[in-house]
Amino acid sequence: MIRRQQRRRMRWPKTVVLLAGVGAAVYFGHSALSSGAKDVSILAAHTVKTKQPTPKTNKTASPVSKAPKTKALPTSYLIHVPGKDQYPQLPNGCEVTSLAMLMTAVGHPVSKMTLAAKMPVDPTKLVLGTSKTASGTVVHTTQFWGNPNVGFVGSVYKAGYGYGIYNGPMYKFLNQLLPGRAQNLTGQPFSAILAHVAEGIPVEAWTTTTFKPTTDWVTWNSPEGLVTATPYEHAVLIVGYTPGYLYINNPLNGQAAQKVAEAPFIQAWHQLGHQAITVRKKS
Image 1 (tube, helix red, strand yellow):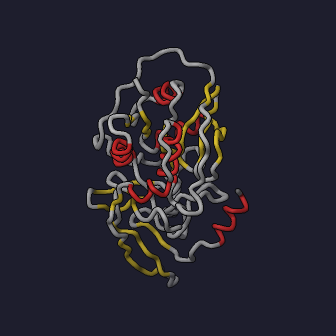
Image 2 (cartoon, helix red, strand yellow):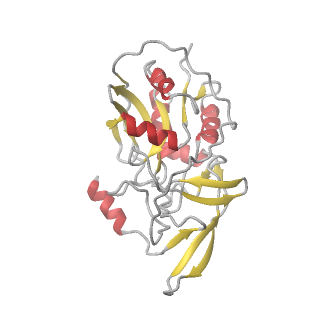
Image 3 (cartoon, helix red, strand yellow):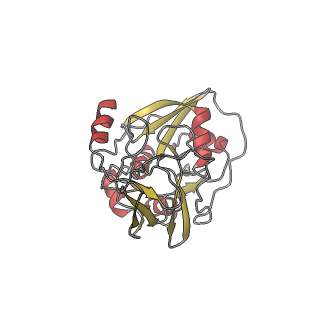
């Protein structure tokens, strides 16, 4: 996996780009680099480390289910779900690849490519501004792009030109695939996710490619207003837990039941707006 990341990093474009008003490195895409960042088409000259904002997610775009009643959970739990790799076809497809694994887990297998072709897309084109530094370096600033609360921003197929999609449109999409069974856990405590996993159904959650908090944030304008995002945005399928750790199916490498530290994962999940979707257990 590390070798593949290094090869992808060597193919990055050379363009230097800064987002307007941010001055942070932008890596739009979902490929893990050796540092954990996404694939690069928009590179900044430097990265500014600041107190990170929480990206605004559209929590009213879909009904959010009530948290299940508190009950004692098993100390450890693991759901065996086959892993799926988003590569090579979907370099920016962590969300739909995770969804494909969720569909398989609940007995309705569907390919990641089918999901990628049908998922909601924000068609807003990327608008760049151009300027020069005092040294003559050409700098492109991202002024306008899509909103992940509306649909996928950029291209899920083109490495280096895609950001992602958030829980609202993905919940609606899941409800089209399984009418009446989609469940939105966004905004609920993380214990609600673990409780759902303990019932035998995994949960797709938004986190970072490093599975820990990030200080790298960028902004751009969209038709709906300002979008705050991180170049490390990622989505995985939570399939289990054990004291201090989570088990995830990671679309970046296709690994099933990858063990990651729970505390930093949850911190990153908080940063990404407490986003999570899943499927209701059949009554």
